Structures are given as structure tokens and as C-alpha cells.
Length: 173
Image (cartoon, rainbow, N blue to C red; front, top):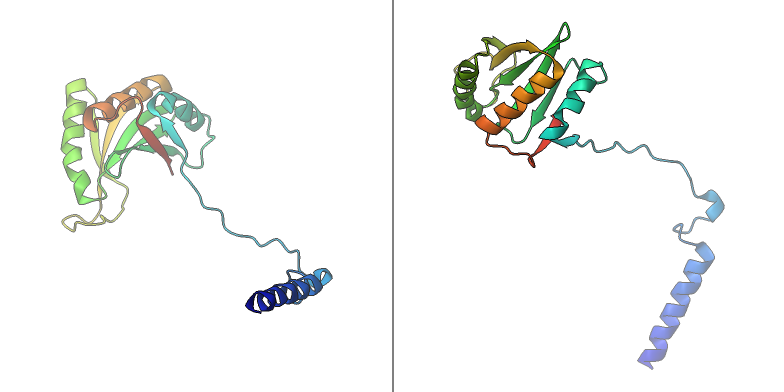
């Protein structure tokens, strides 16, 4: 008896679904076929360090969204390649407290290699420290071409942040 009752329920349910379709009682001709515009999730482009010259060529040829491009392997390991009058230089911004010690390390790196530095700011407010109004930026004013700045960037990321040839970098912005 129970088996017959379950069979009747299944047949009845199937019949109702067949009559109404899968549109919750709405006939198929009444179902809207509008495409809903759902915002896409954006992911950063990722490269290995040997692809850096390609990214810098895009920057040089003004094929990037902004006048700079950054590479980040971690929240503290993020450098920005800037272009001014066809020459490139590298900036490092200490927006968080954990980045502050790297300013000294990068300044020492620059000194050892004979790269002039300029201390600057973008006017950004530090995230988790309050001893400065604006987050400091250290700029390695190398003012060189694409290939040379790529070599310096590679050397900087490997020396200061212990990255290697297989490290993945997010391209920012």
C-alpha cells in the first residue's frame, strides 16, 4: 500500500510539472528571456618575472590604463614602474607598517648599485600607522630604458623580497 501511495505521488507530481513546465506555473511563452547584467569579477593579470619586459613595453607604448604599472608578489613586495619622458624609474610605497622596513633595505640596495633615490609621497594615507600624514614613497631615479629597468626590477625583487624566476606577480592596477 505504501509503495502504491508513493508511486501515485510521484506520478501526480510529474503530471503537474509536465502541465506547468519548469516555470513555476508560468507557461513557457510567458517566461522572460532577459539577460541580467551581472558585474564580472576582475582578476589581476599574473606574470612571472621573465615576462616583465613585455608588460613594460605595453607601458612604454601607452597600452596600459595608467601611466604606471606595478608588480606584486605579496602585500609587502610591490614595486611600481613609472615612465616620464620615455625614461623609466621604480617607486616603492610604504602604505602599511609592515612595508616600512623595506624602505631602508631598498635605499641600501640603491646605494650599493649607484642608483639615486628621491623620497616622495603620492599623498595616500597610511593604512595601519599614524606617525606620518602621508605614506612615504622611495623612488629609484634610474631614468633608463625598458630592458634596463626590467633588469633592475628583477634584481630588486629577488634581492630584497627573495622572489625567484617562478614567483607569480599580480599586475596592478
